[in-house]
Amino acid sequence: MVGQIDILETMTPLEFLSFRRFLDESSGFQSVQFRELECLLGIADTFDPEWFKGDDGEYNRLIKRIEEPTLWDAFVGYLHRNGHPMPESATSRDPKAALEPDAAVQAVIVNAYRNDVRLLSLCEALTDLDEALQEWRYRHVMMVQRTIGTRMGTGGSSGVDYLKGTLFRQCFPDLWAVRSQF
Ligand code: HEM
Image (cartoon, rainbow, N blue to C red):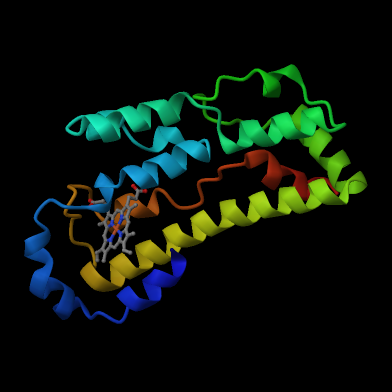
């Protein structure tokens, strides 16, 4: 996903504006897959499912995703079942709720880092994923800025200003919090 942006950035503002009007109201806002990805990563509060009401298939798929456990819940469950008991706040949390940093969970993760090399690799892989999504957001907003400047988005948002507000949103806050605890 990040690699695609290099190609888009070969397009000058004039080239993009030569066909932008044909996009009409089409926009990245219509990507149900992107919202599904956000649901899986536990950040379902970034959008309103009502946006997808026009298409029953997409809407129902999204609602199902919102109800389902997230990648973080799977991770917590995995640690819990493999010798790293997690607090109840983490094992029985509402998957729809936004993830908040949890000191008790962080203590388990710090211990896993110190004593279990397999889990250490898993934690690093999840951190890579979190960082990669933030990297995509940054590359996308910079590409947008160099192509359309401060124009509004075709989806009706303020454009660059809106996208800047989505930067640095962490999916797994506990994995970032432990970095200062070693
Ligand atoms: C590989 C190509 C692209 C993909 C996969 C993509 C994907 C997305 C996604 C998923 C969003 C929603 C982000 C969020 O709400 O956090 C978004 C929004 C947006 N994108 Fe893109 N995008 C692409 C190319 C472009 C281009 C070429 C432009 C303009 C030069 C652009 C301008 C915008 C704007 C302004 C928004 C904010 C929503 C709006 O008002 O339309 N994107 N895009």
